[in-house]
Image 1: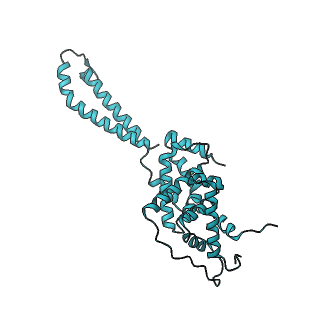
Image 2: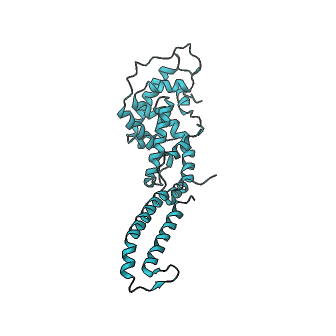
Image 3: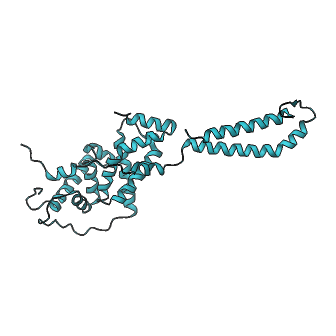
Length: 101
Length: 175
């Protein structure tokens, strides 16, 4: 025969608690996703590169205009066109990174 | 049967998978909130705030979880630490000397138990909250608290005796 201790029984009785929005509240408070943080950093880098490009492009174009071959599709000197393409690629990468999964 | 805790943790760590983390929270929220409800002596709002803190901290520290220990044990440790550090910052007011329930009171319900838990010393309440209802063995509870097993058992015993005096009418039988 076993004497059940009523205090033991009370303590061991732990009902399941329904979630009732608890998980959603935790998720709301999580820090931004790593993927989002990467995308933000990438976007900032692309913006900085674009600004630097915008500032240096006329000078660069002027310096290389005499020696560089013209790139027919853009009508720009090859180095400047390459820089422009690089900026477009960076922007596209940032947009892809920011896109939801 | 869904993926194991270890699989879900791996997904969170590998690609910050929020669905996997949500699954972990849903799986363990009841036990963590129950533990904190007892530690907070029935203060549901405070317990849920601490439970949220527990899971946020767990998210940040997930990489430190050693697969050898059960995730639930690890979460209980974090929950207890969160509660203990808050208790240090804002100590609860001294409880008046515990008074037994009137024998006229009828059935003992959950609220009564939580009320009575609030009358215990922090060590006794902690020992009982972890050793019962959280699904932990006494050894696991002692390890979480970093107490010798004998110390845990002493606090459990003293806490139970106080609960008995508070909750059970003379004679010691539950109504």
